[in-house]
Image 1 (cartoon, rainbow, N blue to C red):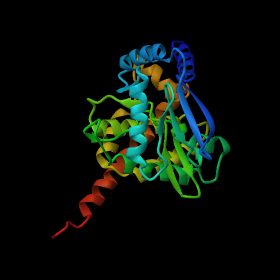
Image 2 (cartoon, rainbow, N blue to C red):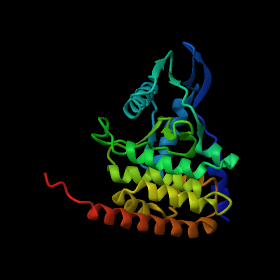
Image 3 (cartoon, rainbow, N blue to C red):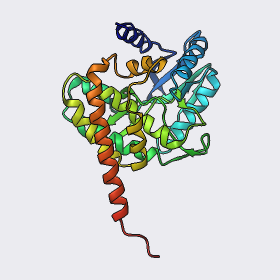
Image 4 (cartoon, rainbow, N blue to C red):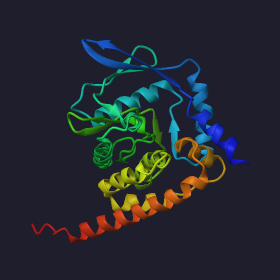
Length: 274
């Protein structure tokens, strides 16, 4: 009986929005202007208290200038070849439109390329997880990698990460942060209503191929208690524990198998004799 109200609260959490986004044209090119809503700082302050009680390891930016600095830093760090993200007037950032559609929209459309998109998303995530970030003094991580924040460009055959308004706490090690990024994607997948989730999750995990991160991921794949369970429900779209526990076991097996394969491949790779 306790589970139902927790799932309702989680659905409400998913509807909270602190930024408003407007698409328009600037200098002849389509852009998104992302701007803080009035009163957003108060909402974020309470949200951060909840995230801390949930032991989530992530936080949002109470100060708008810190958020805009981080958004611009991440875009330039990960995609220096793309049009520049700029600060806008007031509490806003101007973001050039990224070509493609989100993984969530692909799932909604039952797009035939969705498996390929998840493989390329894992490949892109592995790439950006190797980039050094001056803020962390370690490798970069996203912090809120839900399926709307991964865009698949079918023409370029690549995935792009967007929306950098949440980050991991600086005191958390990079392996744990990276595994959390993977976990957020996978928790959304196990909420799917049919067996499609298994095929996509296996492709995603196998393509990522970083053994230490996958080992850490398998340790994180459990249903938490307390406030952490509310966040869990939010990430799994309110899926019942009874339904997801067998799927979590499958994910742990996938992660362990992929980790073992990655370690074996690394050991078999010939050393540089120079």
